Amino acid sequence: MTTTNAVTQTNDFRKIALERRSIKSYDPSIKISREEMTEILDEATRAPSSINLQPWRFLVIESEEAKAQLLPLAKFNSHQVETSAAVIAIFGDLQHELNAEEIFNTAVELGYMPAEVKERQLPFAMAYYENLSEQARKDIALIDSGLVSMQLMLVARAHGYDTNPIGGYEKEKMAEVFGMDTKRYVPVMLLTIGKAANEGYPSMRLPINSVAEWK
Image (tube, rainbow, N blue to C red; front, top):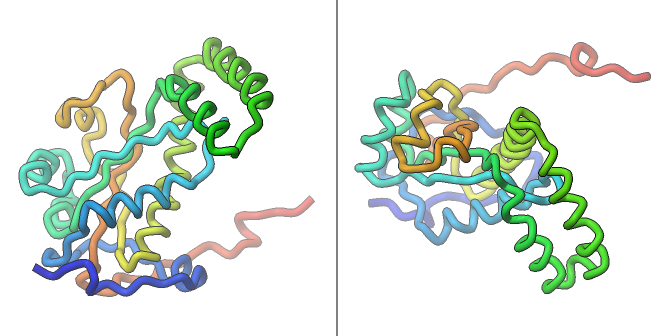
């Protein structure tokens, strides 16, 4: 089995961003250690989120048994699932305000936030969520989880790995199949990660003057 020290890391952001490809086939001999996957996820979670409540949750599907559970849900993406080092299922936590007190208290302990700011902002955040509709909660979770997903793809690339975001799978069954609370966790996307078996294809982008305007 090839170890992860075979991959090449880079700090060149232009190379990371402009040479990223959506990869559909991976080298199945390349695996990612638990230690490095933790590091990748840790760096990805530096993405911003509403009131810093970090509503994203990750399910790292890497064992043959877990992949076998995922395959019936993956539709036409089975080759990606089978050859990737792992598939990261990204969920949004619809009850992410439950972590607010821990997040604010830890921020104070680490010196990131003055205690008086916490005393002012924490009650405001909790009151805000008490009156939030289910759809508004879902919107926040999906938007913030989209931010962390993009950051995860860039971080993976910096570590020398390739990725592909997948939206074509049976989302309504994901949480239940993997024993997660179906009312709390909403599926966002699957993200395959590993070492590309080929370079993939560049893709066209619309010119900026057709997608942006200035006033």
